[in-house]
Image 1 (spheres, helix red, strand yellow):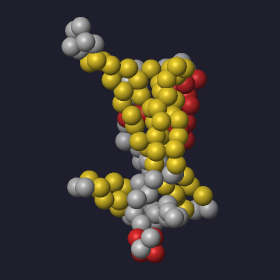
Image 2 (cartoon, one colour):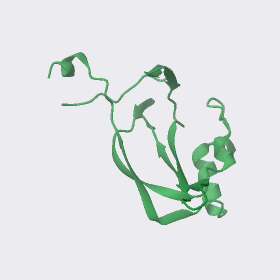
Image 3 (cartoon, one colour):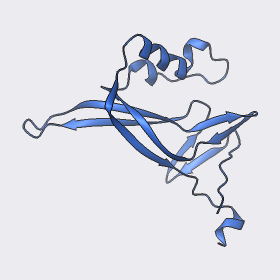
Length: 132
């Protein structure tokens, strides 16, 4: 069974009441918390970021498969939470370049003993595949 992972730029993806518009900067953020049983307090432990799309020959594709994503210490930096303009974006607004710069400046630290395993797949079967 093959899966179609192409979507047209600008089309909406509907997920049970939520409408997402995927673009070249679409990512899935995993916010990992730590719960202290003694105090009952929850704190930021780490985060992971998984890109959702890949651009190839003027088309964007959903990245499907299984991946091991590195986990970074603490909470997601506020610089990466800022809404990004997609068209006409300057290099200093590119999320990938912002992330790389934060790593170089030591503001993001990778937790070497931790990874998160993800699995992304396109569950929208074409008419041919739904008969299988």
